[in-house]
Amino acid sequence: MKRLLFVSLGLLGGCAAYVPPIVTNEHVDLAQGRELFAQRCIECHTLPPVWHYSREEWPRIVDSMAHRASLRPNERAAILAYILAARDIPVERAR
Amino acid sequence: MRALFMSILYMSILPACFAGVRHFGFVYEAPTSAPGSFELENWITSKDADQVAFRHEIEIGLTDHFQASIYFADWSWTKSETRYDDAALELIYNFTNPVIDPIGLSIYQEIRGGDELIECESKIIAQKNFGPLILAYNATVEAVWEDDEREGEFTNAIGASYEISPRLSVGVELLHEFVFPDWHDGEEIRNVFVGPNVSYRRANWFVTVCALAQATSTPDEPDVQVRAIVGVGL
Image (tube, rainbow over all chains, first blue to last red; front, side, top):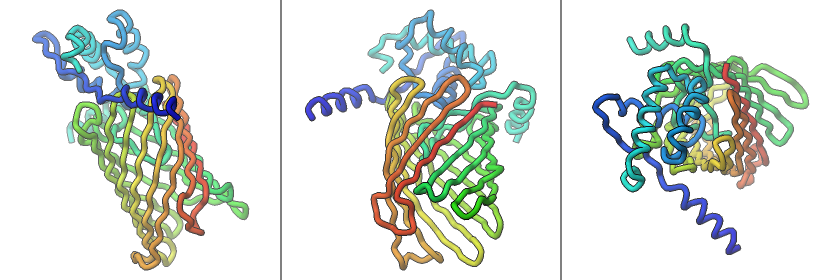
């Protein structure tokens, strides 16, 4: 029973609402990337925190799902630009 | 209007894509399908194994926040007969996002027509994602005119789905139905169904199964109903 309680608490601990952080960059429309990230990706799965994968992994991950999420090339680029920019901000700020 | 026209134009030139995964069998989720996506969904719902209902549905993403579905064939099998039941049109409009907004909200409207059957169903869909946990709530009002009878129904549906991995989710669903035969509440029919769900997805397909057991003792309602939904991106 105790074990079940610990497992349940552990699972709930991982369920804090993850809100993709707001990131600004004068050169790229990161707001569009954030919106697309939060909108298209959750049609199939919940959102992983952006720091969950490395900078090298993200382009491959986004590419592998771009077709499924009906992303046009500019939308794919906007999502990736947002993820990489958000990934660079400190974790404490991004939470 | 221009956005809708552009979406239709875009859909006509883009290769068809996947519309989205269902994490629940009976509860609807707030996000709508991506514009330009097409998906075929086949539903099988078994009620006490005495009756099996089938649905074949095409789901189309029209704009970023608007999707339409056509149930082009709802049919059913019982021990005595197999029959075509109805066809329907379903529309869902999404207002807010369950991740970046405090709560994700959508409205749903379905119109169904069959042999001496008209059914009108409206829902408010609310959803919030907490990391890998999806919580969803549907409030549904339904009006049915069949033969010379009419009936109303109000349903609260709640679901939770926990994503174990990006491909696999498990959860639980609960339906609380209030049935109003002939628009009256005289018979006070209350049904509660509860049970687990599991959803598995791969490249361009998914399968979701939910089994609900009746927690009340309404004689005309099934003791157990099982629904399986298989979706394939076209």
